[in-house]
Length: 134
Image 1 (spheres, rainbow, N blue to C red):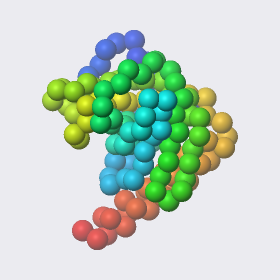
Image 2 (image 1 turned 135 degrees about the vertical axis):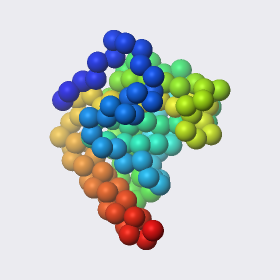
Image 3 (image 1 turned 60 degrees about the horizontal axis):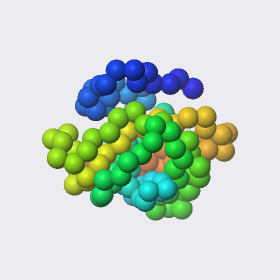
Image 4 (image 1 turned 30 degrees about the horizontal axis):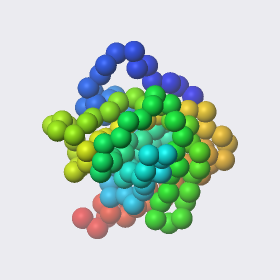
C-alpha cells in the first residue's frame, strides 16, 4: 500500500486536491468510533478518510478506529495514520465541527479490505441513485 509522505506541513485543501483515489463525500451515514469518542465521516476512499468531531480531542499520530454505517457494515480495529488536522475557528472547517482530521489506512487485513470495498461499493450505488433523482 502506498503511504502518503507527510514530511511537509501542507494545507488540508491541498490534500483534498491531491487524492490518489476518488472519495465518496455525498450524504453518508457513516461514523468512526475511536478511543476518544465518535465522529462523522466526511469523505472516504480505499486509502483513507476524513471525519469531524463535535468536541476537540488530541489524537496521536497512529491509532485504531472502527467504522460503522447505517446498513450494518462494521469494520473493526483499523490502524490509521493522521495526515492532517483542522481545529476550531479555522476557515476550512467543512461542517459545524470543532475538529476535522484526515487519516490514511495502514496495514489493512484482507477482511478489512473486503469489507471496505463493500462499503465503498454501497456508497457508489447511493451516489448514482442520488444523481439520477436530480
